[in-house]
Length: 132
Image 1 (cartoon, rainbow, N blue to C red):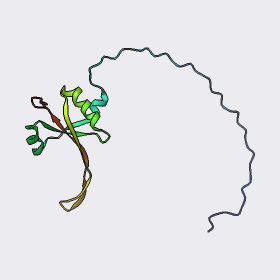
Image 2: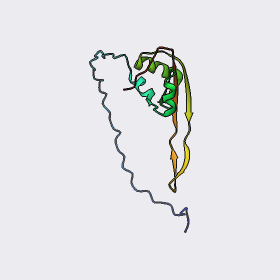
Image 3: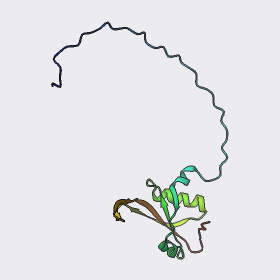
Image 4: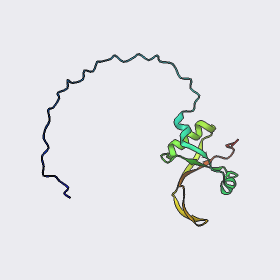
């Protein structure tokens, strides 16, 4: 069995096709409407995934430190802007912690704990964030 055949293929008559003619179409005019601004953009909503509710986060919230899970491409500036827009408070400081994926062995099976990026938001005294 050979990989490359030594036989040359015979060429058959080639049918010449005419090139396709594409008609130019003028772009449609789109009516512009003013968007109603709610003060919160979609980008701000996607930065903060959810509040991280754990025992440690509950204890830290008593000292004005709130913990959120954030998107993987979020940075301190976008998190600060999202907190200002959503909760109407200005963070004093933002720390970001990246928790990588971990391999685990539970109940006789191998698995993976998903990684997450979390942000610890420090607020000034007197400021609060209410989770409903």
